[in-house]
Amino acid sequence: MGSTISRWAAAAALAIWPLALSPGAWSSHAAPARFAVIDMHFHADRPDAEGPPGGKICAPYADWAPRDPGRPIEDYLDGFTVHPTCPHPLSAPSDPAELRDRGLAALARDNVLALAGGDADTVEDYRAHSPDRILPAAGFGGGDDFPSLESLRHLHAAGHLKALSEITTQYAGIAPDDPRLEPYYALAEALDIPVGLHLGPGPPGTAYFATPKYTAAAGDPFRLEPVLLRHPRLRVYAMHAGWPMGDAMIAMMYAHPQLYVDIGVLDYAYPRKDFYAYLRRLVDAGFEQRILFGSDNMVWPDAIGIAIRRIRGAPFLTPHQKQLILHDNAARFLRIPG
Ligand SMILES: [Zn+2]
Image (tube, rainbow, N blue to C red; front, side):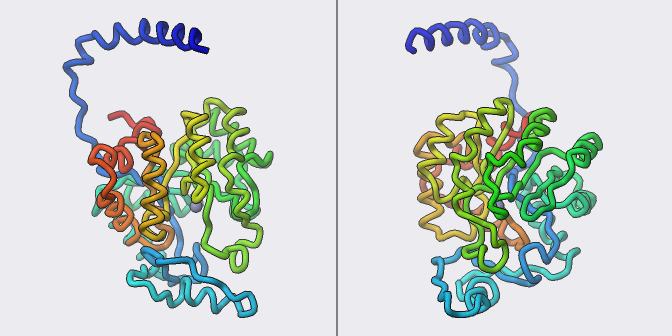
């Protein structure tokens, strides 16, 4: 093994040395980045995308409340999203134009470029109102509404498809290595566009009120492994960083250096101590260059700014690490020249 590595290192050094000595490498200065933040988990949503319009979410929840299975599910939902008692509940606009405009205003306020998932018409509507801040992506998978490959190729050819994201098949109990997803991985690999997979948490108790086929088990980071091995050129990021399966996520990121994660929803709705501990664990394990900022704003535009400030306020991150997470890692992953 050792000799293989030294041979590889010698070859790499030979290949890189002339570049390092070229005059341009010393004299060029990168232009300042155009955006302060890249949001890899922005949803171009309509108000009814997360249940009845007007629901609330806590930023953050203090804990995950117990549900009495002998009581109607509505009692549980009342505390979770209808009348939550947390100090900072976020409200969702019920009007589609207001939701869109407040979301776009939140992006502008913090100078954010957003990879926007959703159905094609809604994404295009958002993009038409803020062409410079929206990178269009196609999200699917919560139901039986998989898009045809032809429709995705068509979107891509028209410049309307920069990623397949968010693929939410976990809500249908479909794990990343399910054969039904195989054609989409092959397409993304062929088109050289990233894939973002929901991996980890849904709303607590979602199987009992929204998505009956959701399973925690289908969010096991190890279920990504056959996909990465079958598609070695594929750019994949695990959305929600496989929370709370840090052991498996770290094992996967270590074994597969092309794998990135985002921290959507954890960064505004999850208890501060838990989010910081989870993020810190990934950073301390050596993956500061593969953690992407994501808001997972859904229908709550104020979540974007709160999530950004939680990263900026993280006491254990250096300014350089904050810059990597908020912008630079995504720019590299998306191959945005800069
Ligand atoms: Zn998600």
